[in-house]
Length: 387
Image 1 (cartoon, rainbow, N blue to C red):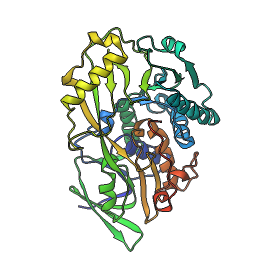
Image 2 (tube, one colour):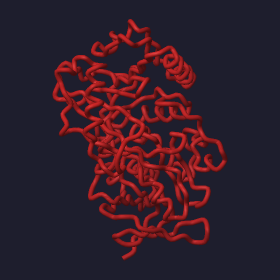
Image 3 (cartoon, one colour):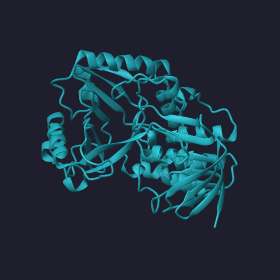
Image 4 (cartoon, helix red, strand yellow):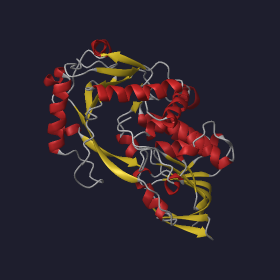
């Protein structure tokens, strides 16, 4: 039996859910989310660590954060769900003058975009922001008090439940296995393991699997999965719930408080194993535990709980910026991909922007710099480590 949909959103994570919700708010009927999982939260959204920041080095990422921040502040009144946005700050720590100069350069861009509350800290000021961090080898820091934490699964729930009330439909446990194109420029049908779906438009919100979905329409999308790992310590009352997300520029090690424990991460550049392997590596756990103790001496009393460690997947674009907009090779396929670790925090903005594009409205934020064609045009963003 054939299903029909005005817009088929492939991917039921937080970005796909946000797009579907915003489409329904704009009056689009017959919005359908298609996802291979048996239910919500089984993919990357459920493994996100829940950070939110506007401290980026490029104007567009800062703008996406500021737009999302406004949406988060009104999220509960719109959806009835608390998104967990807590403004405890992000603290970026520099161990050399070169690192501090990079943070200051990024902060200049942030101030130009209106993030005026972001500020630079001298070494002796760091302890006032985070009393637990060892400052012996630090030279300074930057801090933004309006950055902080969010609850990814609650944001997902808010969009899914609100979308359902507005008429969004769902097709869970359905693999997308093909697409039918009419001529060269239009998709007419999405083929799933639960039957075909006739469509007017398709949104690719498939996260780490976005390139595979695009290939079904004969489109080369430069998005690839990147495996990242996370570790929880044993319960540690000494770590306050309002400890800011604390990041060491030198190696990307970062820590935050979560549910009475410390959540610690280290993005080693060559993570072993299959990207589909979502178990943390024992050697990585050993390394991250040693880093945690070195940077936060109090964690000597709270070793990593190996039973809670896990891995998840980022969806990476070549220039570490999102790919947003209609495909240059297919007039009714829209991409919402490649957020490169920032998808959850930017999902409110991305949902509004893509839904505006589909409904013919001018988005509130100009995201032409994120257009899918930029890679073919040679108009990519310069690489900026971490920020």
